[in-house]
Length: 63
Image 1: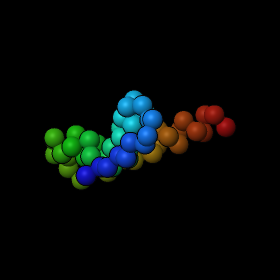
Image 2 (image 1 turned 120 degrees about the vertical axis):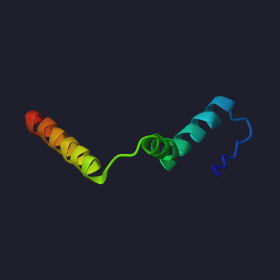
Image 3 (image 1 turned 180 degrees about the vertical axis):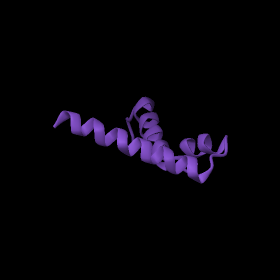
Image 4 (image 1 turned 45 degrees about the vertical axis):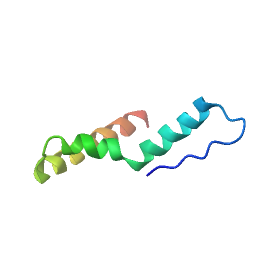
């Protein structure tokens, strides 16, 4: 459970923004989306490798 202490005089918008940031860090939503459809380990590994190659090529072009 995420607990956000609202300080005296703090606007609700700021408190909500802190809540959203904390919620994003927990990774609950990301895990929920990943569990919606099963992905085989081999496919997941392939996607990780593809992403790594993409990032490597992206940084190699800038250098």
